[in-house]
Length: 217
Image 1: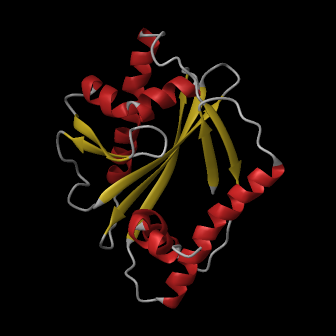
Image 2: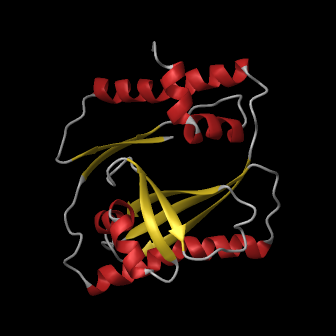
C-alpha cells in the first residue's frame, strides 16, 4: 500500500505526521477485515489483473496532469474515435477523483466485464522523462477465463491513451507545465482475507461500507 499526500506547495512532514497517516490508513483496513471475517458469506468476485510499464520522455508532473487530472477534457478531444466522454463520478477532477471512461465502441471483453480499474504510478527517470507503471484490474461478477488475445487487447487499449497524450505533449511543450507537490510513503499489511473480497469491500463498496463501520472510530 502506498499513501500519497498531495499539496499545492512544499511541506515538511514530521515523524509524528507520517506515523499518524500510516495509523489512519491501516485503521480502515483492520475495520473492514474484521467485518469480512465476521461475515464470511459476503459475495466473492472475479478479479483478473496484469501489470505493465511504459517509458515516456515526458516528465511525470506534466504527464500526470494531462493524462489523469485533465483527462476528462483532453482525452475525448484527442481520441474522439474511441472515447465518447470521460465523466467525473466523484470529486472535482483533481487528485482523489473517480472518473468513468465511456468508449465509443465495444470490445472483445465487453460482454464479460462489469468494470476495469487502472492503477497508475509515474516514476521520474534520470533523463527527465518517466516510467509509467500500470496495474490493470478486470472485474466480473462471474468466473471468467481470459484468452491470450484478450490480455493483449487489454494491454494495447491501456497504453493507447498514453501514446496519444504523450504525442500531444511533445508537440505542445508549453502545456501542462505547472507542477504540484506530492509526499508519499509505502507500507504493507497482511490480511487473512482473499484479495477479491477485500478489494470489493475496501475499494469498490467503500463509499457505502466504510462510513458505517468507522462511524465511531
